[in-house]
Image (cartoon, rainbow, N blue to C red; front, side):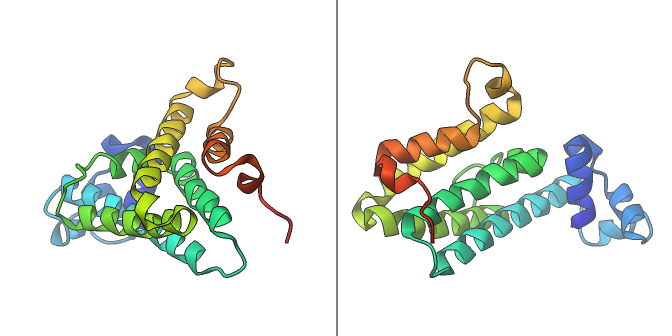
Length: 183
């Protein structure tokens, strides 16, 4: 999987071939075909792993007793931005699956959403969590996408994805709450 993800990072989906994954893994070029019937299945597995890593990161943030719920929320949104910056092709691939996907990638995405819902519910309560969850996910995904496309670096926005997410937090939870506090 790591070799497929590295190929994806280096050149997008077109750079990923099962034969090259086998070569980079030090096995025969045909060996990956024993695990994946085709390139699409391999890319689906890479996207699934991306969602699992994001869900694991948010779960770890939730388990940290040293952070406030708002700090956890900001860090969870930061995980999305970091994934978009460090693995832009995988990030786009992760969001390419439809929301009602019942496959393994859909289940992994749902797990992330469940973890994220718990983070948002800790700040806003369970009754309001769905509304704010959608707002934060769409806002962060949009900011990350604009940044990845270069539209935020044109000098017209005067912000990066982090600054936009901080503004979104300030607008929803209050300026004092959105700023990290000193321990």
